[in-house]
Amino acid sequence: MARYDLAVLDGTVVLPGGPRRVGIGIRDGRIAAVSEDLSAADAEEVVDAGGEVVLPGGVDPHFHLGIYRNITEDARSETLSALVGGVTTVVSYFRTGHHYLDRSGPYAEVFPEVLAATSGHSRVDFAYHLAPMLRSHVGEIPSLVRDHGVTSFKYYMFYKGLDLAGASLDAESYTMAESYDLGHLYEILEAAAACQAEAGDDTRVSVSIHCEQPELIRIFMERVAADASLAGLAAYSAARPPLTERLAIAEVAVLAGATSASINLLHLSSADALEAAVELRRRLPRLDARLETTLHHLALTHETYDDQRGKVNPPIRAEADRARLWEGIVRGELDWVCSDHACCSEEHKEGDLWRALPGFGGVALLYPYMLTEGRRRGLSLERIAALCATNSARAYGLYPRKGAVVPGADADLAIVDLETVRTVTPALLHSAQEYTPFEGIELTGWPTRTILRGATVFADGEPVGEAAGEYVSRPVAAAAGAGTAA
Ligand SMILES: [Zn+2]
Image (cartoon, rainbow, N blue to C red):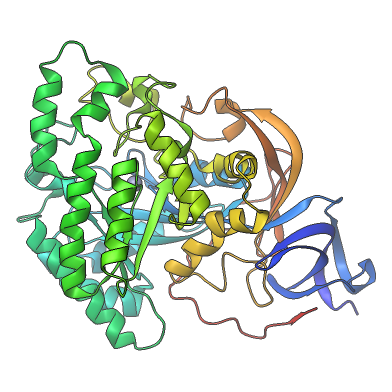
């Protein structure tokens, strides 16, 4: 009898230590062996990688399932888009309030509804970050960690006291919360830190923070609205300038420093934001702070893509910002790249710039974009795998089940032809979003096959089989029954 259900042979496998010409033996959906000695006789079924590169399935740790559409519909279409780019796990943000389910209430009630609406419809494995919006949600943090597998929480700094929602709602109607302010953030940080301390093992309970400072946005929005010389995405960036990120990060530094909470600084968009985050780390070396940027902040500027459909928070910036973010990637200052995928239809982007909804999709381009631009800047394949899979999996309690090709891990793989050149079009991405701000960008390096827990789920540009994604409760247990690495 064959030792493995499946063997992936003749590929250059991107292992944590670097690429090697090895076979992968898969049993019960997990990687059981990584070895030079595997042959077709060892397995029931063989996938011939044909000399292509085998990467760990991508982990996109910043996603917004159901933000502007029915969450079930969104799970169906947008996780298919994930497979196009070799992403096999997404961690999606959810909060109560306006958008999403348009309701408030305890997560003990709401979160099972979210899981029920997603389960059976996602084509990738998924987890959720939850945003405590009510003070009572902070009290739920211990049970969310213990009973629901949620180890990461979110705070949006710019929701405080503003009419910024683009939906002509005041902050209170938008958040459906009483006092959503720095006091609330302080209590979230405190609760997360206490949970992490109580767990005692290496469980990381973290708070992800959207860093834009609302009192400054109020002033700059007023000025930009009165300035006829500014329009489009340049105006939008000027209304929420990098200074708002810098001040927000300084506020976070004080509160995270005081509580010793593990934090993730989300979607850093500008040179100022990255400098402030690097400074935070230098001043608080014992604080666990991880830094994120997005595909769109690495790929787009308001100079090259001045189209209202590119409205997003924080905004698309200028070339100098994009260059500094790339420098941060190359130097290792930034820990991972995400898509911040939010399927936002054309109609939601029309009309007044200030009312258009922020966000758009991009998950399908995570590996193709990073393989193209990262390699052009000298990044090794293992660095690209770390940025697109391993580092966020580690930060969010998904490792070692997700994020690396190691024995014991789920057999989530992206087999990529590094020679394939494609020009991005909406059709290529299989998303429900009718347009893409990345349209026309030529990328080299596309998955030919995406494998989820040992089963091919996408091949030759089309999905294979039904939606097989499962909820991943965090932190995942350490790999059981690990096989052998040669
Ligand atoms: Zn987001």
